[in-house]
Amino acid sequence: MLAGCVLAVGCGSGVAAASGKGSGKANGSDVATARHLNVTAAAIPGSWKKEPQGTAKDVVRSSFDSCLSTKGKPRPPVAAATSSTFLNASDGREVSSQVQVFKSAGAASAAATKAGGAAFGHCLSKTVRADLPATLTGQTKLQRIRVTAGGVPAMKSGEFSQRIETVIVYKLPSGKTAGTTAFIDLVGFAHQTAFVAVEFESLGSAPPKSLESATLASLRSRAAGAG
Image 1 (tube, helix red, strand yellow):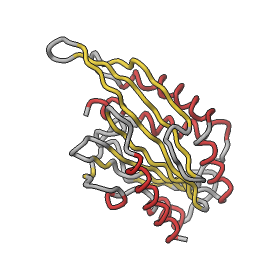
Image 2 (cartoon, rainbow, N blue to C red):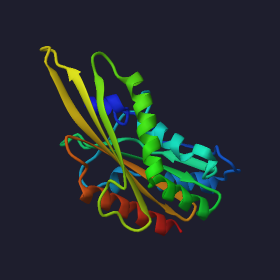
Image 3 (cartoon, rainbow, N blue to C red):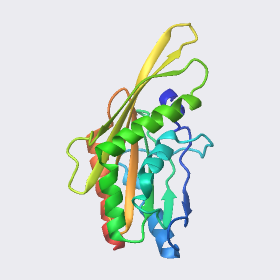
């Protein structure tokens, strides 16, 4: 998948990892919570295959984290974990996630509020635009990027969304120029001290709302069951 590789959201960039780095002392429960609330193949409707671990930089995720920590609010999490990247071979869509656990429910809620704001969307646009060109190979170029805060329709109360649209142009072996649009929806929610962010990537058209809603509902149910 060209766009997935270019954006480094796919191509095996998802890594099931966890850390206790942050503003406070993490305990085993915090790390376990971060791991438990990440997306799995069972949480996504349809047939999904775990991508092999890769080494490419995930431009979107690193930009998301950078914008979230801007100006020190909210304070860094006490634990964090990322999921593997899951691929639907029939349509090329990809899904991955990350979970951050904060010292308080208020900090997690503040993170979700910030992640859905227009200022956050502006930061994402600026950061991705600055970092993405360095990852492009050959004659592949970024033609346009647009980030829309709240761009995913019909989100439920307490959920946030940002939609990133990137137009990538590249040379075919024949010498002709072709292009594609990659849609990346960043959606999620806060539950108690946990902040859950899920990435849905799709080529040519936006990720189906039904896919996003069902996945978030599954993760919310898992979070409620965890307490």
